[in-house]
Image (tube, rainbow, N blue to C red; front, top):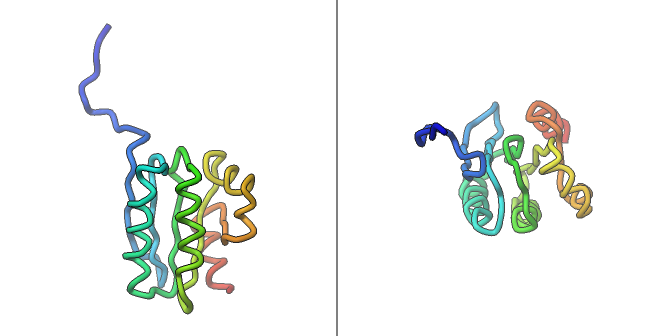
Length: 125
């Protein structure tokens, strides 16, 4: 048996990247959003929203697991992000959109299946 060196990327490792797309601030989340990483996501959202961007999008496309703690962060962010900032979530996989829909949060959050859809949807609001 050959062991691999530590070069492999841990798919469960949590990360939040921030970038700008047009007028929107996009937080690209990867890994698992659980009770340990949810506070980091909340902090990233709060930090990004303090600048009052026209739009704040949380992109969960690379999230492999979304726990209730992560969903709570999203609902809290939706409530705390104040106009004129528009808030949206990209959730397209079984690991993200399914639990959001099962919990009925798709009626509370603006959910999109892709970043392009979120950008278009926010522009239409």
